[in-house]
Length: 382
Image (tube, rainbow, N blue to C red; front, side, top):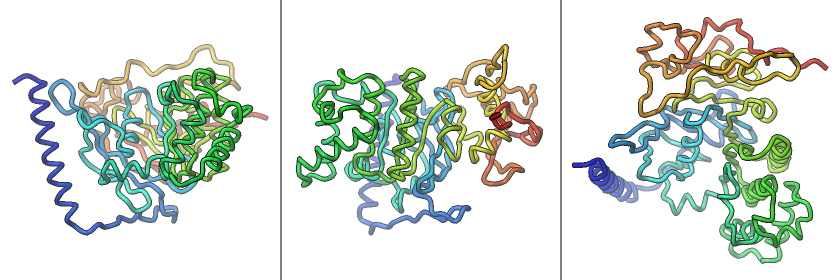
């Protein structure tokens, strides 16, 4: 039996099992989950617990994200940081039901949003949530916008989908207001233009406007500035700050740029090879990092207030998830490992650090980093 036949057989069996489970669940009375009150005394708007996502690659299931746990509080800006392939986008796309199944599948976990487990919802139910309660800004607006439809029509469609009885004139006024909010000049004229008539930065502004069209409670921004040049990135960041202040929506910002994190976010999750390796509030992460990977990410950034001859890159490359290193996945690139057997054999658990305040690290020897200060620890001189 070849790989594709095995895949089809396993995929069909999984589909039948999922259908049986869905029918069984449908016969039971619906129960509503409840988000637990967090350590800060605030009930989170989203609580992800033990999320696991696999993909079928080369005849076997490969874990792309494992044991993902985090909370997002109302009005909070949470950053998920990591290199390409770290699992940061997959873990959030799976919550919204946006990974293709197959070849992807959610193998464990829950994602409780306002008392409802998103991972147990059917696609029809999820469509009611997406764009209404939950919204997403994708990396490349040109592939997200339809090139043959006018910008105004596409933004209006996002509103009419969830509010079909809303008068057209009112919807148009709302779209113009949204374009003005995100800084699109001459919004009345831009309403009737096509995506190719917008610059890259303007298209991303339009996508941000679309995402907040229905005043969502949670906004997910997946590397919204990656495809833009530096000056436009700064403008889009200002738009995101304005939008967050105006809508008061909680935000998950997915990025590899720690500079953006320092400017916008309150808490940080650092991911590597499909797992969370460190998390905490932004001040603690920048001043007292407790994972060698986090320190490597910071050291690879320039500090404009100091003269630096060389940046310090992280040696090597992120591992392929198909051939993930045993033990700690970061140990082949780690300055702290130095060939230690424990690093090569044992997967480090995510455990609290001495700093408290919800700061945790997945490093066997994180205590050895006590007193290690990143180059961003000191305040910027006036």
